[in-house]
Amino acid sequence: MDKNNDHGLKNHAGRHSNLSPTDYLERGKRNVTDGKVLKGGGRDSNARYHVRKVGDDAYSVTITDKKNQILSVDTWSKEGKEMSREYVEEKLATTSGVTAPKGFWESLE
Image (cartoon, rainbow, N blue to C red; front, side, top):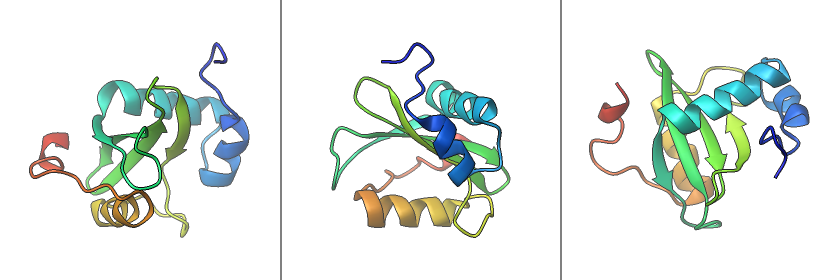
């Protein structure tokens, strides 16, 4: 593991956000420390999805492995908009087979 928990995230930042690589990684780390965790299903049962509310209907998700090494940080949809609850729920369900338990979203308030 790289000492900064950076596994190619600098390149990923440029493709998936408008944040600088440093801010992107910091957001990812904050999602891990301050977000709520959903455990993986579907393609990767070892994945952890750390979800954090960052606005009225805006969420950021950090995907880690079981050792909490950051694999990905998702903040914006393909359309360049902040990710809404509906968007995150749909993407988690369709791409990862993960469904949040009752009360999960309310616990992020």
